[in-house]
Amino acid sequence: MLGLKLPTDPRWVNIVEKNIDEILTDHAYCEQKAASTAISLIIRFPEYTDLVEEMIALSREEMGHFKMVHDRIIARGKSLGRDRKDEYVIELMKYFPKGGSRTDQLVHRLLYAALIEARSCERFRLLSEELKDKELADFYHKLMISEASHYTMFLKFARQYGNRIKVDEKWESLLEYEAEIMKNLSKKETVHG
Image (cartoon, rainbow, N blue to C red):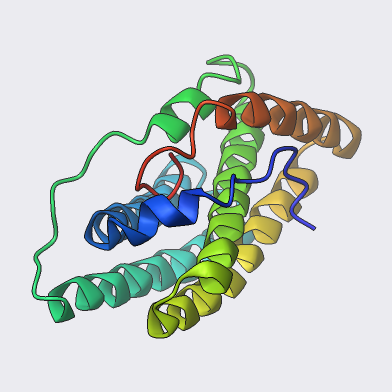
């Protein structure tokens, strides 16, 4: 369903289990950045009313997820750590050239967002199936469902606003590029890395 070309190495869950506090901090910031992405799409492309409406709802939902993760951090007797660079997103954002038409810029941002959500969904599925902490596994199962709907929403908007054939070609090409990125990741206690 997600179309990812390279699945996450299942051993990544072992790294996560040894570093739950680190993954929770990274996850909290991923949710905050997802909310920021939704808000930036509103600011950059306000004339797309249906997109704006969805991004308003998404920003609220993502901040709700941020709170849920933050609450788990607090419940563990910890505090939110510092944000760190997301190597995955940094590499992914290099794929499409800067500039281009306004429509191309929008489509590229939507495709990036769709792929980030798809990878998050895949990672949350792994956590929901493999974590020994069943409460945390259930938590990630619920979030996995949410991420899947976000992925499909972003991809739907990209196809709606761009030329469907070109968008699908770009999507396939981006998936191939992302698979190359993933060959060097899955070695850290981060959601994407």
